[in-house]
Image (cartoon, rainbow, N blue to C red; front, side):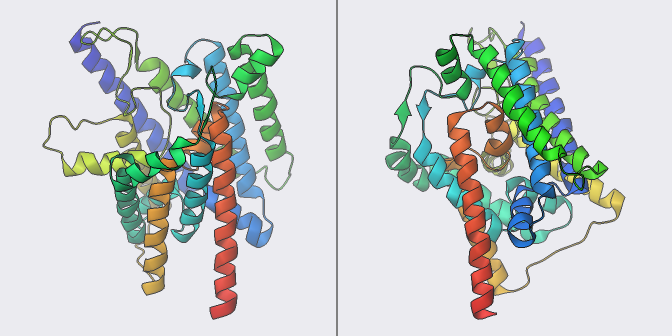
Length: 371
C-alpha cells in the first residue's frame, strides 16, 4: 500500500467514524438512551424500560462482535480491551468513581455530549473538566498515582483475560467459536430479557437499543477491519489507522474527550491529528444538536446555583479519573468493552452500576436531611 492510499483510507475511516457517532448522538437524543437515567429510573421509580434498552444494546453488541471475530473481520486479541492482565482492582475503583460521578454530573460521558448538543451549557463545563481530569489520569499527576497503586494489582494469564479464552480452554475448542457461542448465549439472553416486557416493546425503546448496539458493532468493524493495515508502508508493521491506542477501538467517551481537548488546544502542532476518538466526540454532539433542533427540543440550560455547580464539578472530576482508571465509561466499557466479553469489562460495568446506585441513594439521603 502506498502512502497516498494510506492517507485516503485514513480519511475514509474518520468519515465513517464521524457518521456513526453522528447517528449515535441523534439516536441517544431522540430515544433518551442513557445508562445513568436507566439506573435512576429503576432505583427511584421501579421503571425498567431504559435499563432494558441498555440490555438490548449490550446484547446486540455482544452478538455483533462475536460474529465479527468468528468470521475473521476483527481479531479479539488486538482490541484496546485485550490484555492478559485482569486489572480487576482498577476496574472496580475506577468504575465506582465513574458511576458515582455521573450521577452528580447528571449523566455519563456520552450523555454529557448529547446534552451539549441539546443546549446544556453546564454539560459543556462538565465535558471540559472531565477531559482535563482524564488527561491528567492518562499522562499527568493522577496517572502517576494510578500506575503506582491500583494498576499494580492484577491477575496475569497466559492468554487474554476474556470469557471466550477461558471457555475455549475448558471446552477444547477455538476461542472464536467459544466467543460466538457465548455471544449468542449471553447476548441473546439480554435481548430476550429486554423484549420480554410488553411495555418496553415500543418503537422508540426498541430503536434506541437496537440502533446503539448496532453502531457499536459498526465502529468495531470500522476500526478493526476497514482501518486495519497488515503492513504500514513506513513502519512495515501492522496498524489500525487513526486510533489513539494503535489497536482496534469502538465507541468510548472519556479518553476521547481528553484527546479532543488536546487536539483543540494544540491545533497548530502538526503532530496533533484527528483520530477516531476525536471525531466520535464531535459527531455525537453534532448528531444530538441536529436531532434536538429538528424536534424543537433544543433549550439553553445553565446551573441552578452554587450546589449545582459543586455537584457537577465534583462529578466531572470523578468521571475523568474513574473513566481512565476503569478503561472506559458506560459506553466504553458498558457496551464496547463488554461486547468483547472481557473479564475487566464485567467488573467495570458492575462497579459503575454500584457507584451510580450509591450516588442516587446519597442524593436521596441529602434531600431528606437537608431539604
